[in-house]
Length: 166
Image (tube, rainbow, N blue to C red; front, side, top):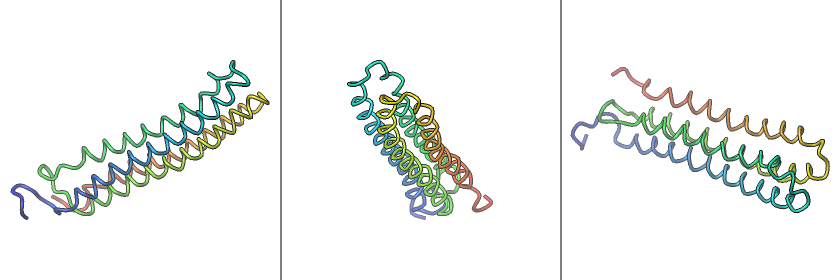
C-alpha cells in the first residue's frame, strides 16, 4: 500500500473508471450514429414532403436517448468509486467495467439499428404513410436493446462492493 488511507487494490479504480468511460463513449457513439443517419433520411424526405418533417423526427429523438442511458450508468459507476471511503477491490473494478461495457455496447448497437431503420423508414413513410406505425414498432424494438443494456448495467454495477465483508 503506497498511498496513505487507500484501501483495496491499487489498480482497481482504473477498471471502474474505464467502465464509466466505456458506457458514456459507446452509448454516445450509438446516439451520434443514429442521429446522423436518421437526420440524413429526414432531410432527404423533407425535400419531397416537408409537411412530414416533424412527424419523422421520432428516430432522431430515440437515438438521442441512448446517450442518456450511458450517462446514467457512468454516473452510477463514478459515484461508486471512492477507495478512501470504502475498500475498492478488483472485483468491484471488473463489475463496473462489465457494467459500462454492457450498457455502452448495447447503446452502440441500438444506435446503429435506429439509424438504419430511421433513415429507410422516414423515406418510405414519405412515399407510403401507412408504414409509419411499422417503422415506430421497429424503432421501439431497437431502443429496447439499449434498455436491456441499461438494466444489465445497473444490475452489474450493484454487484460492486459485495466482494468482501468490510
